[in-house]
Length: 200
Ligand SMILES: *[C@@H]1O[C@H](CO)[C@@H](O)[C@H](O)[C@H]1NC(C)=O
Image 1 (cartoon, rainbow, N blue to C red):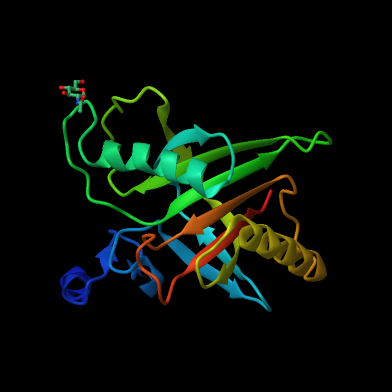
Image 2 (image 1 turned 60 degrees about the vertical axis):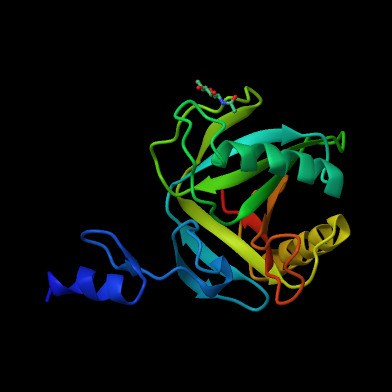
């Protein structure tokens, strides 16, 4: 049985890890590779997910405006298209993560954009403003919403998520959040967006 399981999993399009359970990528990953997690708990308004450690490429951006996000996204996209030390074309993945860190008191924000890498052997980016990053394993609280997400939509959903977390008595990191986008800008219907808040 143990030996037939991986074959079965391949058959059904699951990714398998030896000695652990099968990972079936959620439907909102649209058949692309995306970071592996287990659903810990489905709550009123949010999911509690336990993510495995994951690898990303990241570049800082000026703000969360659509134009700054696009500029950052294209840098990361060209890295995957082959602008790297191995001249290697890397299959696109999901999601794109916009990370916001708010400095205490001043209201100043540090913003970056990241693209998930399913292969851990990541070549060096030609573009020196891109860095390779690791997100450690841990609990992430996730609120999902549809539509073409604007800056304001993301912020509203973060506020709601934080309220729901407080109501549920969950501890979380207060001054950071991520917005995860799973769809290309030209996919107009059935879009899936998430905001993430991390557990300390
Ligand atoms: C990226 O860098 C590699 C060498 O590190 C080089 O061979 C390649 O031409 C560069 N690609 C671009 C698009 O500049």
